[in-house]
Every structure is written in structure tokens, then in C-alpha cells.
Length: 478
Ligand SMILES: [Zn+2]
Image (tube, rainbow, N blue to C red; front, side, top):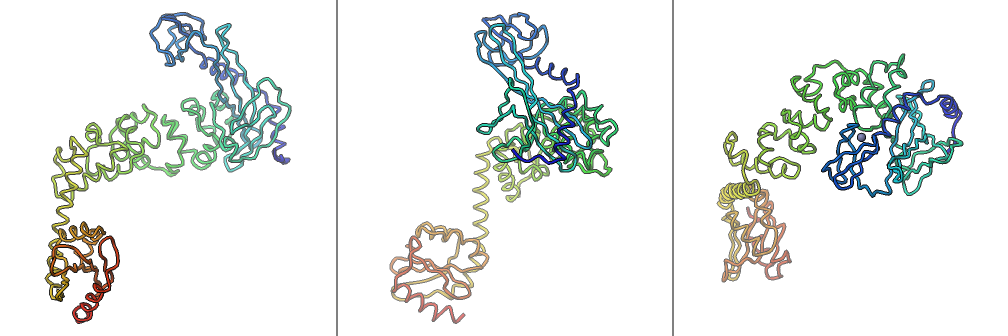
């Protein structure tokens, strides 16, 4: 419990004088009705809402619609004993310049004796806020917290309000989310700068969200944009109206898609994530948008492929997008015809990817080998030989790959650098056994910077003597 300052105390006292409007009772009743179930014994179903019986093949724990009251309910076994639900219902209210979220918990408990529900709806929290950054939470002494959960005592009368500080432990104080009653909002906002926002239309059309955040992020500076989005029936987008800016813009500038997509966007009440995908793929297909949510390469892909086609071929999902992008990159590097559908949409991605990866590798090696060969011609005067040892420069990728393999080291990874003459690689070997690797030597600016035998071990003293002599007699004189 924390100290409640005079201002907050004043707001709390004022809010206590407000009674619950009858429209909120209507809202509670609507939610009570939603909490009902259908009981099933054999083929016979019983609706706890309207008390009618009907026959149905509906499955246990799936939803089905009652043919009498037309509500859709969860189907449970007739023998059900314990069943209860809890949900937060929120009444928006206002005192002076502060808004209030009055939070009620609707507790519904199934009564197996009468095959109906007992309900209790209890207010346990109030959030005082404005559209700036004011945000104070008070809770009644009818709620306690245990193991990170809030438990409301429905049969204890609330005797006082206490201020709650937000803490990581009581995570839920940060955001109060629940079903918001739409019926009183229009009246409440009358005469305020929000009177044309149509907020009441939004709250009943989307799942529970953080209303305080909406006021503080979207409604304070972007209420015009918000209003426009709600009027356009783009309710999910209205929740993030701050992302669309406040200036007057054309539809296409605002949404990044042509206006002809509006009916599609309205029909599916699309979310911001879905719009993000739509911007890239420009294909009004909701299943496609949902499948591609969270993919990282959509913009890159949008210049190269037809999304619908790629998706139908199973090439596009969060799981395959990276492999598909790599595949297309290889195809571009190899100079393939990027209009050819058989190239763009391979039937077996893994196989096609591996095949092209090998081809790219081979081409890269060929290019490197050409450069290494040229470098060899410049370096071959450095070849040095005694009775026992010989040292000579690498002249191809294959040689370096072979050296890497024999020496169990990473010479291979130097191929590119050697081809670009950033360093020179030499092989030191026994004259008596010239095909077997002995010492791998890296030279930069005519100086030996690294010499390693197998497993990256240091050469022997005798081997170093040879290298020093080579360095002194040949390299230094370059
Ligand atoms: Zn019914």
C-alpha cells in the first residue's frame, strides 16, 4: 500500500459518488449470457442459457450454436460438476479532468444442481488517468495478490480503497485490460475534444485492449487520425493510429497500399502486422497475410517474386523464407533467367537450394583459381629449395582446400584473401615427399606472419631455420 495524495484522494471520493449506470447493468447481463454452456448426454444437448433441449452431434469441448437462443457455447459433459469463469468488465467514467476505468470482475460459477449459473460482479480496481501521463491505480480491500495472481473476494464487502504502486510482481497493474462497456461512452465524451472519435464503436468491435495506452498514445495527438480510422471501420488500425501520422495524406501515402484495397481491409478488420505484409505483397488475400506475418525478407522478395504463387508452392513461411531468399540469391549470382517460373518457384526448395549453392561455390572457386594463378606467376621467383625442403606459392583454390584438409586448419578460409593478394600463402614441403603437406606459411609484405604445421602447431627449429633462411635470402630482396 502506498500513500494516496490529496489530489488522488479527491478523485476517489468524487468517483464514489457516481452510481453505476443502468447501461452497464445491460452490459453485465450480456456477458453473463456469454458465459453459458451446453451440456451433452448421448445425442441430447441442454442449453444452460435458454433451458432448451435439442439433439446434436457436437463434440465435447468444442463450440456449437444453440438452435433456440442462437448463442454459440462450449459443449461440456452432462456430468460436469466444477466449472467457473472470471472476466474483467470495465466501465469508463470521468471526474473533473480525469478519466476512470472502473474494473469489475464477473465471476460465473456453474451450479450442477439447477444446471445453471450463479454470478457475481464486483468492482475491485479503479484507474485514474488522462491523455497525458497521469495514471494512478487504486484497489479495494476485497482483492488480494498471491503468486502473481489477483484474487477478488466476491463475498466480502469493500470497505476502503488503497493506492497501488506498480511493481514487476504485480505485473497486471501496468495495464488494465478487460471488456469495455460501449453504451455510456458517447454520452461521457460529449463536450470533450473526443466527442467525434466514435470510441464507443471501437470498443465493442475488438478484443480487450489497453484503453489508458490508447488515450495516451493515440488519442492525445492523433485523435483526428483515430476518428478517420474508426469511421473507415479499420478498428485494429485505429488502435495504433499514432503510426499513421496526423497530417493530411492521401490513402496510398497513409497506408502504403492502393485505395482499392479498402473493402478488403475493412472486411477483415486487418491489424498493423497484416497491413505491413500487405504493403509488401500487394495481394489482398487474408490467409496469405496471416501466413507471412513476422517474415523478414518480404520487401526484398517483393521485387522478385509473385507472393501468391510462391506461397501456394510452399516456398513462403517464417520457416522457409531465409532458405528461399538464399536460393534466389544464388540464382541471381549464377545469371539465371529470373522471369522463368521453373527457376522462381522450385518444386523442392531444399534440393534446389543445395544444388545452386554448390554451383555458386564452384564458380567462386574458378574465379579465385584464376586470380591465384595470376598471383602465382608474380610470386614464382620466390620458390626456394635446399636439399631437404622446398617452399612454393599456392596456385589454385583446390591446392588450398587440399592443404586445409591435410593440415586440419583453416587455410581454406584464406582463399578469397589470397586471390585478392591481401596475403600470400606458401606450402613448405619435404623434397623427398612433395605431395604431403608439412608447413603452411602466410606472408604479408614479404614477411612471414604465420607458419603452422598440422593442427595449427608451431614448426620445429629445423623448419624455422629453413624459413628464416628463405626470408633472408629471397623474400627480403623483393
Ligand atoms: Zn439456448
